[in-house]
View 1 (spheres, rainbow, N blue to C red):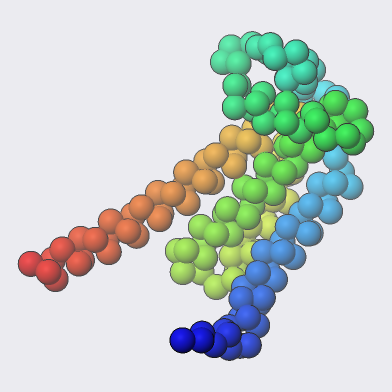
View 2: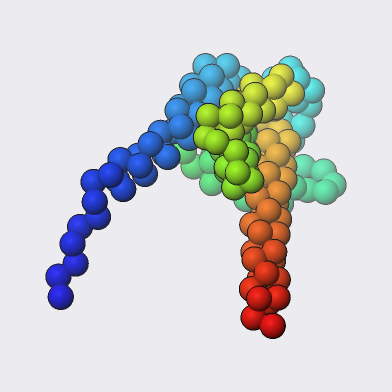
Length: 173
């Protein structure tokens, strides 16, 4: 049997669903890119930047706790042929904070919020001075924000699944 293609309205609805997160990423990405520190900086309490870049390049440990996950990801970003080594790790921070904002958008959508209010909340997070300051320098805080957001998203997904499973169990007897 021959399957018919998806109706065009499904594709249009999917594009509408993706357009708001795409605008969110484009806006915050442009904002972070335009304000990204060109190298190492002491601004915004970025005192560990030199240690982190050096440790990522050499495979060393900056200081306890060592931030192994950050260093592994940073070593991948150091392979991008763009700007100085510090610029590349600053770029890592921007990508992590973008991911945090996008995950926050997803959390709010999963919790039942409409797309526009969820995007406004994610944008408010991404432009909050503390988040913005950590998105443009070499520091571990942007990665931590992404991990916390991902953890909250996972908890929400598990919670919804557990509630559904309990409901099915109660109905099934």
